[in-house]
Length: 76
Image (cartoon, rainbow, N blue to C red; front, top):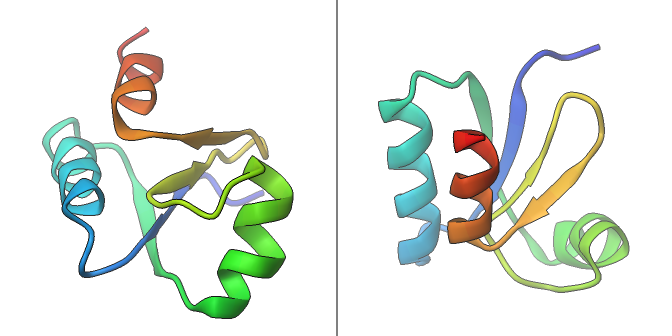
């Protein structure tokens, strides 16, 4: 199993930048995935119920969305 978090992002998203900065600051290992239309339709929508970024897939397969709740989840 991959031990890295997958962070689904877009370069034009300020919130993606916020999440990347947080993960780097906390030294949390992650793989950044620049999303495309197929990712939105085939990965994000079925797993989160939304077509919004950033989203994180945990190594255990749990999906997180929305930067503030994601940061709160990591802080717990």
